[in-house]
Structures are given as C-alpha cells and as structure tokens.
Length: 103
Image 1 (cartoon, rainbow, N blue to C red):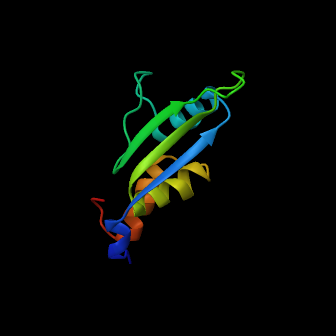
Image 2: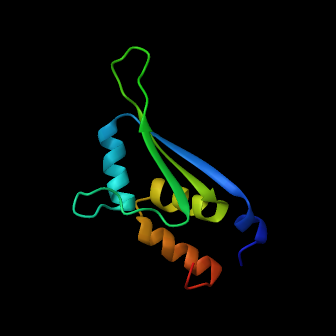
C-alpha cells in the first residue's frame, strides 16, 4: 500500500554520464523517441537534460535530472536508471504499487 507521504513529497534525482552520447542513448532507451523528433515525455516527472564542460575542456559530462513525486522518482531510479527498464516498466510498477490503473 502506498503511504501518503510518498505522494506528497517532491524528490529529485540526477544521473551523471561521462559523455553526451551515453546520455542520449540512455535517454532514448528510457523515455523513447518518436520518429527522431525528440522525446515523447515522461509521466508525472519533470525531465531536464544537459551537459557541463570539464575544467580541462577535454570531456563534456552530461546529466539527466528528474523531479516530481517521490514515488515516481524512486521508481525511475530503481527500474529505469539502475536497471534495464523503460518508461513503460516504471508505469506498470507504479500502477501495481498503488492499485490504481489510472496512475
């Protein structure tokens, strides 16, 4: 059963990558693309992607940051980023946890 505090609290998670290519590959796997026109979107979380320049200027580490309800962010962190799951797997997990088919 889902606890009320999991639904009320906002959470944030930032996944770091060594390169832009690795970030794009993971982003396409998790969130999917539609005919190469960009990401479809992520349900119940705000998605932010970007890159930073290293001090030496040789590497360009990238990141994906998600922010939203604690339950959704934890599900993305556990299933999509640390496992090999996709956005669909995250949605199925949250629906199973909450017992709500409209989650």
